[in-house]
Image (cartoon, rainbow over all chains, first blue to last red; front, side, top):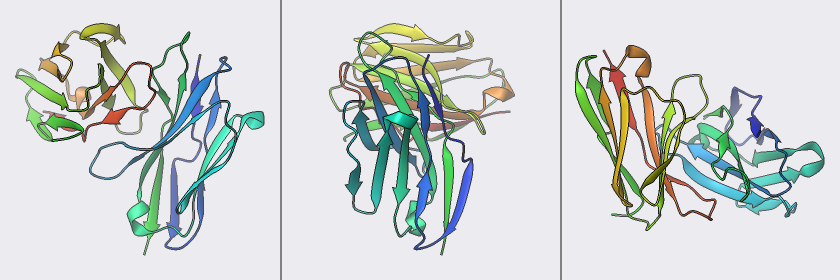
Length: 116
Length: 112
């Protein structure tokens, strides 16, 4: 069975600080996808990134970066120079490839509060 | 319109009422989903429709009744709800075989 753990329930930082959100997953499949979503106060889950299990290259998109480490089953998300608009709940999710359920399992989310 | 649209955004209903939540997607996706998001709990998958057929029902009480008349529309019919059913109900859509989900903004439901 697949499982996603986001151990940090809430993180509070001051604007311009860097912050890393942790995500640890469990799966028996060798082929799977990992996701990060952002949920601002408006409620909609906004897709941020999808990474397949065969691609361990780290990815950077502006102030966002992701560190995928299969050896530790982690897919951590770092926001550099945080801004107030980054305040949201962030969800990590895991989806197993064909042969397993393709429906993602979500972590409990990490609430990020960025203070001005 | 683009994306996934949910109506209403907010709903307050009594325990004896009957109401429906609506979801519409304009992305050409062929799978649609209902999720429940309660405070302090992980996202709970309720129903999955693929090609307009229900393919998953995660032990959801019968007071929740989904309907998918076509690939663009999904409803969640509610009747005789309980206060613990108060939550954010999120609709999502995807194309089977593609692992990207698009979510709506949700309906904030309060049962009084």
